[in-house]
Image (tube, rainbow, N blue to C red):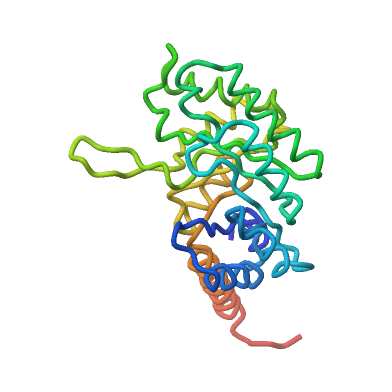
Length: 264
């Protein structure tokens, strides 16, 4: 296999963010995260305290979303939400930028918004991932095309103190001409662009649309270090299946090459 199990498992932030998530599903999700040895769970603010209890001493980190999913809360609300999450046990924060302010070209507001959350998180020794929601940014804004817009956001977020820049929430549904809603989430193009625009001290996180092992491997190949995933069990079970098949194939090939069997 190209990467070890641990290398891929420790890329995964197991996402527990669906609006209908029950208390039992939260507990089951945390247990699954421990079973598969992922990097973290990514959860809603009210659930942080319980997740911290469930994951204590497990090696799985507690991450919390802030201003989720559309980034529309005022800056002080995001800051206080971060304070509460960190007090309850979150050690990673996934915040959403104010998308409307960014599209308006109010870059001063956007940077101050991100920096306020970064500064609060750092007071608690937590790390920050800043979510762009790229599905809303494909046409650009404020006189910039889509790629130039994402480049500028990457630069702003690094300057404000982000540890990661992140593609999506997984809930950035865009209304289509036929009235339906859908989203792409992470794309190879955006991951390459975001990786290229940040210095090595800022990492990249993919989110949305990564549902199988090959996609997770591609995300790593493109330079991302984390990935928001709901299909954790399916992805990592597939890794184990391929790993076992590879080993079996190597063993068979060894037997064929040495007909005499197991003589030492």
